[in-house]
Image (cartoon, rainbow, N blue to C red; front, side):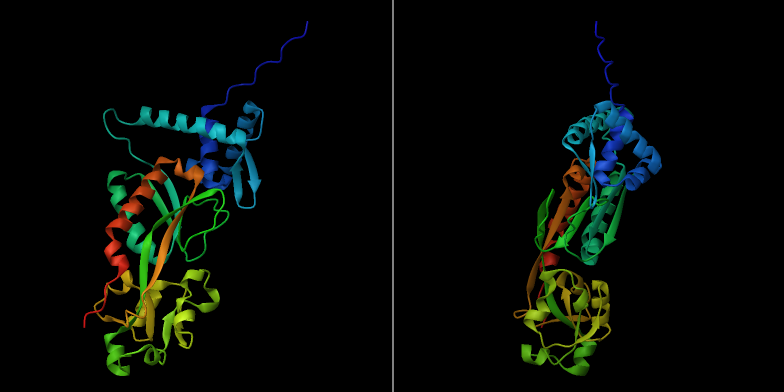
Length: 309
């Protein structure tokens, strides 16, 4: 008589929660940090889960770890475990509070004027939620392990991710009142091109949609260039030249004057890129909603206003 093989042990709920963290961050180290564990423990838990399920739940890619088909089924089960634990740990009759760390990247201006106030408002209701923002101006990454949300300029071309258009903003040419008093106010594009330009470092510009000065005023010479848009604003205010600036930032300063708005009214789009696994995380989904709400609230400023006569 042939004895049946003993059944495989059921997956341990803690191992499923570890899988959630690895899938959402794409890295063992980031998952370990979010769980308060070490890298070795995370690896051991994943191995135990794969033994219990008799198959691989994660596959290694250039950008980190991604779920296999078996891993996706385990991920769905793990979300149910997470939701059940949240209900048990939450106070009776009170809305559960979000916690954990959400990591995002965005441009300097978006981070300061959209993300920061959105996060601050969210944390009044969810004080245990932490948000880490990396400020960078670049194309969307093809492998975004460790990031839950990316905000980029221009429509992204991405795989295994969701891209959502947030809205648009405008850029214009600005100069300080003191600069114009000394150098004169350009009344035409030809006159404007005789002035120096404050903008991005041309050789380091990674976003094609931000190359408007090359198209519109290719003969303008650079005076002060930077990878940080706040430097553009302050350099323009200091009289370094004429800055090609986001209207929602420049319009905050009464000492800046918008020049030739009919000729220089560049419109760019903000897009949000999300890991599909991250979007299932309540904290990420809530932050996404808060960012969209803040963009809507700030829409008039994003569109800019003409300088007063």
